[in-house]
Length: 412
Image 1 (cartoon, helix red, strand yellow):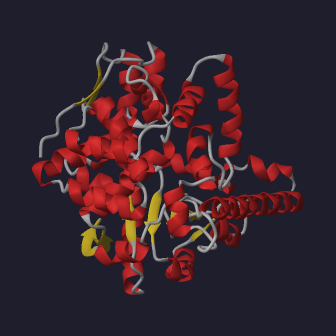
Image 2 (image 1 turned 120 degrees about the horizontal axis):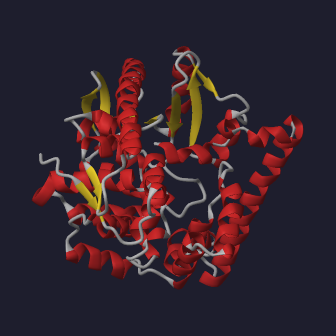
């Protein structure tokens, strides 16, 4: 496998120290230190080169610690017969950065298990010394309204996120977790037994994770996209997709990927992730694939409006970003950039309503109204539950980031 340098398009990038500070926040320090990522600009000045060197050696130590923790968890899960998939961080670093996993930093362990094995997994984690973060809501709250639990190692402080899903329960995804686990194969990782997702499912979940955090960025003009991707810390996730595409080369099964995305009803999300990655990193996505994705999920006016509002530099955009940032800190809120997705959740396309909406005998318009009422009611119920929990514990509870897993998902 070739480990060539990733070159990021120069258009729209921050200037001077702002560029290197954004790169550091986006965990690009190890790659910059090793010369594996480069901007079409001057190299980093000496002070930043020293910072990136420190970032690299910190990643070496961190990966060693997380690798050991992952191996312990996977061995225990295997001993209990719990199907367990290690998502993103450790898995991607070990499999796709084999020359030096420290190039791919991460800050938590993400474990995906079947929903029916969640209780056993929680007990396993507790036996290994993991506990809910201080100030967290009860586990039952997250199990009703979220997609994972966040525990911390009592001695190590290592965050462990126990997933039963990859996005929020109100999303319009139709991910078939039974077939996902059914297509996984026995493998070994970090010296321990683990389930490995099929090549198609693994890539699609990585693309969905990027899309979740960058759902409107792809709607920006190409001249603005690289700068916003750097500023928002998206490059590392794009680099993962770029590496996998380069590694698989002609053997990449694009037809299988498109079919799976259609079956899971995530074609718009896959299209967003691939369009952004191809624009910023030059990832070689076949033209026919990009045309099929664009035809199946064209960029709409609402997405463009959300993208410009969320990524502009004017006073209105700055105020809106500050406001939506407060909302997105909650365990099931959506940021401004997910505004178009939120609109789809409340008012999904007619085809989606026909397939999944309530009361099949009624006209689509009435079924859509019932769906909107149910979704809004569930959202309001969640807000009421949050208010009750905060009232019981005091307003300082909301200042604890560990109680708000959505605010920490950007770290994987």
